Length: 291
Image (cartoon, rainbow, N blue to C red; front, side):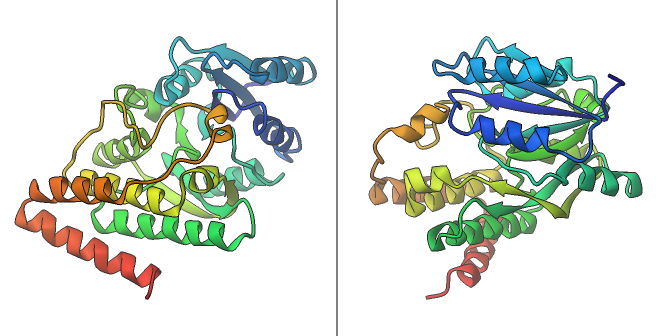
C-alpha cells in the first residue's frame, strides 16, 4: 500500500456496540488513500476482538493499546504512529457517509488549511435530539463570540506536522482538550475552517443518557470556564471518561442546586469585561431557546 493521505485515529473504550458501524462506514469510503488506527484504553468488552477481526480483511488497520484511559493520550498515541500527512480524529460512536474522505480531500486540494472540522447531523430524527443539535450549534456561536471556537473531538482534522508542532492534545486536561487544541492552534497562528459538507453524524447518546438539562449545565459551565481561560485538569464527575459501557447504566438525575452553585462560584471570579461577555452569551442562547 502506498503512503496514505489520511490517518484516521479512533480512541476507544468498551465500544463493541458502536465501533462496528464506524468501521463499516470507513470500509465503504470512495476515497481509498487512508489508514485506520484504533487506540484502545484496555476495553473489557469485545472491542479489541472486533478490531482484530476487521484487520484481517483490512490490513491498513492498526490496533494500539494505551497505558491509560485518557482520550487525549489515546489520540496522541495514534498520531505518533500515523503515516498520513493529514490526521482525522473520529469518536467511535460517530458515523460518516461513504463520500466523507473524498469530500474532505476535495476541499483540502482547493484550500490550504492547517486544521478543519465539519458540521454535524443528529443521529436520529427524534425531536429531543434535534433540540440537542440546536443547543450544540448555539454553543458554537457562543464560542465564536468569545473568540474560542467550539469544536468537539468527535470529528477534527489536522496536518500531522502542525499537530506535532503543537505537541498534540493536552493529556493533563480532564475535559475540553479539543477546545484547548484549537485555541492553541489559532494562537500559534495556524489556519482553521469548518466545512459545511460533508457532514458527519454526531452521537447524542450522552444527551440521552444525562438528560438535556444536565448537558446544558455542563456545557454552559464549561463555556464560562473558557471565558476565564481556566483549564480543567482534575476529575469531573459530570463528564466521566468511562467509554461505551457507561451508557448501559441507569440514567442519573441532575442537581439544579449544584448547577446554580457552580455558576455563582465561577461568575464571582470574573472581571467586569468577562461578566459582560457572559451577558452576551446569555443573550445569544436565548435566541436559540425562545420562551
